[in-house]
Image (cartoon, rainbow, N blue to C red; front, top):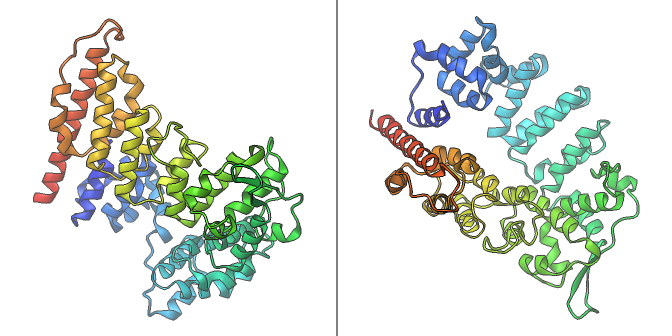
Length: 430
């Protein structure tokens, strides 16, 4: 069952469709696992929604299928599109807007504008979120108008989308505000970043998406400051801070304990703006002594930054991190790497597991990584693992019985890898 998601993805890629007699079992499996539902319903096709209308246990298929399986009008049917938009059910309207946005962003935005003023706040929020697909400069006027919306959540979403457009007027306003808070003090022996956080959240800041009320336990000024820096275009900081590169900026000391706040905001900005250059600077080298990195304040931040890099670079970085820090710190990072793991990453994981085995550590401390390895390691690595299936000699410092548990864990891993290889071969060769 753990491999069903991979099997479905491979079957869909090769153009297979579900045999009708297996649809009930497939729907039952998807009922219990939400992660299976998109692939299961894609594999099942329209019969799944037909069946879902006959069995209340499978109603999730109607909710998960845009419009409950209803066919959307073709692109050339302008009258049908307009009718469905004005009179359709909410799920049908969401599906229609998403479909049009995917193929013609401007047409979707214009359709949304025709009824925007009369939509409910929660519907406006859902519709506005659809603009993330194909977001571009042409969306700015509409989003600027949404900054004056009566719903706070709609205003916040509009501000977030505008801040992801580095040339937008909102981004420019945020850049001015953020730049007023950050400077380089050159009077000291070592150039140092100094921070002067805003003393108030004025109406203009609030209109541009800054939330005035800080969470419990958080200082107001640092809360406002973080939001300004997060929304400011990263491309403006080198000019503001002496022509330095992102890596040089991140390496500068920051006065008065503002370093974590400033770097965390830059991390969020790099993720929002998909800026790989800043992400690399904030990640630092994987061999750095601090597992948190020079700019990221946590491994969770590092995982998000890794998501801005290409799959190969991401895998190589995580492999270097594991070689330095081991597996206990790397679990979150492994979760953002592409499947199957690239060869350097796979080797790093296997080597680290082997080191833990030789050290006599308890294998259940690495059960999470083992589970990931079963699903993510390249099946071609099975041959390298055969030597680890035997029960090792236990040293004096080894945990009692650990050798036998390690042997069982590696046997399971090798068996699963071979099953995945047979699964892929069967689907490719039929």
